[in-house]
Each structure stands twice: as C-alpha cells, then as structure tokens.
Length: 227
Image (cartoon, rainbow, N blue to C red; front, side):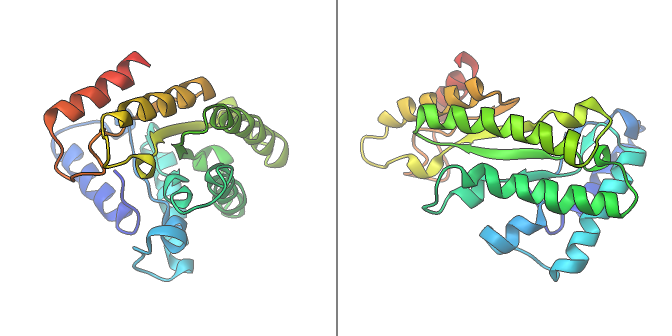
C-alpha cells in the first residue's frame, strides 16, 4: 500500500478483514509504505506533527514483528525525493539515511532488534545507465556495513538491502511518446543489473494521460517481463 499518514489505520482494516476471513496473520505478506518522513521532505501529505507520527511508525514495527512477521512494515521512498532536479545519488542517500539513522536507531532505542525495523526501499531508475547500476551496487555494500557493523544486526536477512525500483516517470516525454519505451527499458535494465528485487515499469503514454490505454500497460508489462 503506497500510503503514509494513515498507513497504520488502513493496515489495521486489512488485518481485520483477514481475521474475519479466517486468514493466519503470520502467513500474510505484503508492504505498507508507512514512510512519514518522506511526506515532510517531498509530498507534504502529513497529518500529524513529526514526533507522534514517528512514534506511530515505530509502533507498527513492533506490532508487525510480533504478529505479522512476513509483512514489510515500511518501504522508504527515495523515488519522490529524487523527482526534483537533484543528483542521482541522493535518490539512495536520503532513504538510506532515513532507514539507518532514524528508523533503525529508534528501534534500538525502543529495545527492539534491528530486524524488526528492517526496511525495504523504493528507489528511482533514471537514464544514466551505468551511473544507476553503480548507485545500486554501492548502496548494497554500504547497507551491509551499516546494518552489520554499525547496528550489530545478527539476522543475516537484515544485512541484505531489499529494494523496489520504479522507472523515472519524470523522464518521459509527451512528444514522440513511443521513444519512452526505450527509455523505460534502459532504466528497468539498470535496476535489474543493480540488484533490485522488484520492478515497476512506467507506461509510455504517462506524460499524456492519467487513464492510460490498455496497449500502453501491456507494453510496460512486457518490458518488465523481458528485462
């Protein structure tokens, strides 16, 4: 669920429906974005002041680690931070700093293990093919050192930087939109060669309309599958 301020509320509704249907919470998997700090930096869709908002996120970590161990309770978004005209490395640096210094640090302060706050990241893939690959690979090495050496994480799963990659909608043009197919394919390939675990490919007509043609969706999905 790509939602932040009301993430805990929607997640509670989701779990309530699952319980009503007889589903086992320990077997449910999924992700809530739940990255409230991104709202103060980029989208500005926050509801509460920073301190209680961050407390609410930490509470979801603790609840998730106890009752829904397969559910990702945060997906830190570098995608929206990278949208403005900023150097590409900030697409990684900002969410990684948020993950390590803020959420992992607060989890430790709350006497939780770093595994309980092991974050998934949402990163952007742009047109600079080799730079993007290098960014992802360097980020994975840095993440390993942060979690293993700085926070002393014992669970080896925590050492792995788990991230989702989305191609850069901001790079797509309304003029000659079919050229966007090549842009998206190159960006997607950079994400895969960089080690991404999941991938979102934008439709070639994204710059033209919000309600896209089915053909554009199929082309984007085909690019995802072939890469």
